Length: 282
Image 1 (cartoon, rainbow, N blue to C red):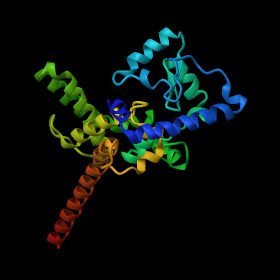
Image 2 (cartoon, rainbow, N blue to C red):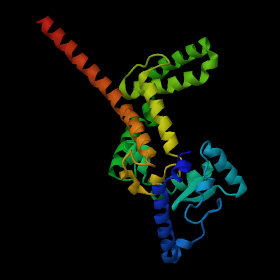
Image 3 (spheres, helix red, strand yellow):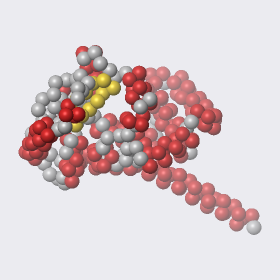
Image 4 (cartoon, rainbow, N blue to C red):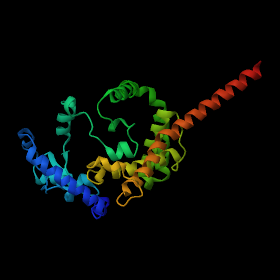
């Protein structure tokens, strides 16, 4: 695990010592309002908090166990000075994020994902602001329920392809559905018709999402707690996260640029063919 190996590095231990000083300074200088009761959760140790309790995989299973153990839909953890609130029911999520969206609709700073891996263009990772509002407005205009009939021909065509694939190979259900979802997104967003199960556009999205899934786990990368670590060169000891971020950033960039380049190429070909037809008709 990235955190375990990082904790063995002298540089990381030095940073943890700095964190400890900051932790105790904040503890003894915090105003009384910050000491209000927090939701229940795993035991918090000095400095590292609940870091050792954080699961490294299938975290949703552990979160559900905590919800039953502490008899609460809201669980609180503190990982190396970062507070994490886990919401474990749809009812509570609706109450907090829909009814009280003006309070809870923004996003925290995501150093690893946005600043190092380059996912800042994704609406789900944007903090509330003008950019987020503009993107949300575009989504509402083009992906609202009233817009669905406009996509019906493409969805029907791809649904038939999915059914044929299931008839031909029922055991490949997961792969067929995966490709169907990717094919729908590519055709509706860029007009790109994907090819078979080994489509390059779908494959690069899946590779990029694998990195995103790893990075989004709270507490996995200490750069989220120490944002200044993002300036550490990738060749330094303990900077494996920089090398991973570089690799994943290339994939995140390709997710956006590969389809865009394809669309530009197709438009150029259309312009060229139109020009040829016009000249030939003179």
